[in-house]
Image (cartoon, rainbow, N blue to C red):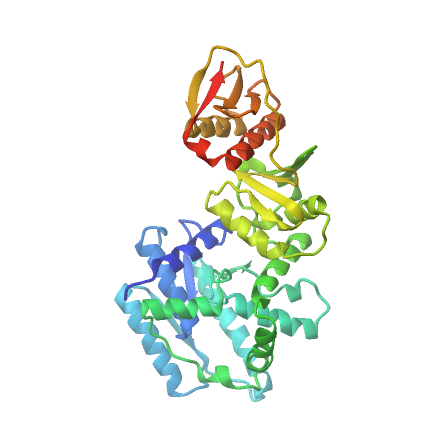
Length: 413
């Protein structure tokens, strides 16, 4: 089996960044033999074999005793995988089923949960289940019709008690593609097609109609659920609003996080509010553009990224600048005669050290571009907010004159 690594690493980054696991975590993987759980087991085993985890994961299969030979087939698939990768497998069988089968699904769910929790306590481990975004949306939809609780309609939590859900960053389609590319063996659960189970009814009767009419439903659900979780104080990262700093200058807004972190995905509402403030428009495809902005930040792009209403957003080392003004400065005279040179990379290093409050020089720097009219005053004696603002203006000038990126900067100490 040749695993499709990009998928594995994407899920790993999500799991580590959201505090689901760390290098020392002990993990019990809940495995049914279906495609989702076999994909999860494959991914977590890959993390261990690649050195991202110190401890080999364990797996646990629960034989429900409800589908005859199908359970045995599932169990063999799981056994073969665990044997191949030297993974310890716990197997438990449910002997006594309730006489009233109307609530069988809930009975088996609680039974599995108790088994997983007991083993996790013994191991000092967390339990990884293969729930994904589609599962969470289905659960949210069901709860919308059954409860008035806001927390309940958020969907399935990424983490609660012993349970973690690393696949809550991918959809069912992503997992299916991963299984195909990695040629993962699994068994299709026939009970997933039985419509008397509530979730199956939602999945096979209602979701297809939603998908056909609203193809972006999952993307919108994830965005809404994250924002609601943050407002309710139950977001996986436990973020506080004080982590974000927003400064409104006369020509735009500067936005940055503590330690100049780049995880702006948790603050899209705040960024959106600034864009609306400068655009004067309350409608438009801002949500889709915000996702493009996140991608640009992740890829280290400077921008500007254009939004509706003539708004531009620039990105610089974890600092965002939102403005509706064009780059248009008049030439400044009286530059000092004695100059030395600093290239683009050196200037970025200087500014980053300044932003992290470890200035490379104690004196004030005067920085300008060769053949450019803009002059910025920077340095450790300049207030940090002004330093950032002036630096952003230089960036804007660079973005307008891209041929200058390869040129040097002039400065005087």
